[in-house]
Image (cartoon, rainbow over all chains, first blue to last red; front, side, top):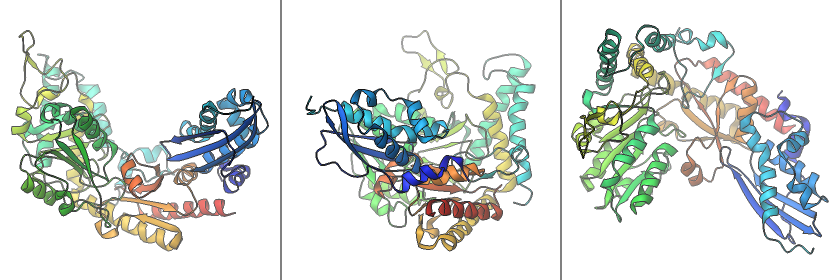
Length: 126
Length: 403
């Protein structure tokens, strides 16, 4: 079966990590992928320039949801600066698959949402 | 439809192909590919200009296709404008009708339109300070004349709707819709998006009595790059040109330039001549198989597919559109717990081509609160074996997501 749907991606899409709302978040953002109708929203709590907690909620294909699950796991505890410096290829490394241009949009929706979320005005304690 | 499939050379190049996305674009049979190539091989001249043999012959062929297309729709040749696509035809109309719309007027569309029959009107309404009204579809997934009637009034200028929904596959009662809005206000211009109807179901423009109708060649076995816009001759004669430039002007040096008569004043610049030549062969091809046979075959496969899907997936599959209103080869569905994009991707890896997403019909999906749907669409080259492969593929998709 499709190598795109490796066990690990299916696992993350079926049992997403960091899924839900974050009550004390100081950043919130949303993004949509119009070609799929995928949508993601993220809540992030930053303290002293670090991402101390993060949650996402969304609706969409396995790739977009698994990518959000992977990404939120990966940035938790990292600095905002590091998270903002993430690029397309970093996401592809996380997912470990090659994607067609159409599915790339699904995979990158999580990164777009994260960057939008972090760009929001915040009440970071720095 | 026995032996039709062998006329489509793509199956020689890709023998395993299960093509179930004909509502997006149909495959092209050899005679039409040959006609397009034949233009480049044997004619290759511009239309309406040159005085040498190939130029004159090209012009004659081009105008013959216009007459042929007119016969196909039972209208006059000067009522046929060649465009690039359905989308261009409708945008052309939205452009030339701009002076016709005043602030406070309204434009009426329906909730099951493809974006190509939605966005041009949304933009025009905004530009003119007019209101855009959206007629909802009913439980049977079609537009009912009485509902449409309740959306039009003395300030309605345009009513634009599709003959067949590109998602539900259901047919609208075109003649009744035109009649009821005209009874309410005879000045309303009625515009039919026939993208999913042309070449798949008989189109009777005279009995429909719509003012304008648009479709594309590439959804009915024709080449890409050519579409047709029909307009009543009295209306086309009174409307301003669209693009201006070569091939459509009489006197360019006058203060107010004078333009050629319709349809030429709507066809500035060199058209896609090869595609128009191919369109002529396309209509021959359709005549040869017979529109009624095509319609019966495609709708028959869709009905079989609906039964097979329900049998295989029971309550976990949700088919959009009522079977008795479906008048096409289009079947859209959702499968519980699996996003349509994942379905399409996994089937795609097995060379089974289906469409997933909003199918350029966001208003329809919003109305149903669905983020996306999966769509299969059948054509003359499909068989029951394709339905079996689809079901087999979907079973594997489900197994993958269940494990």
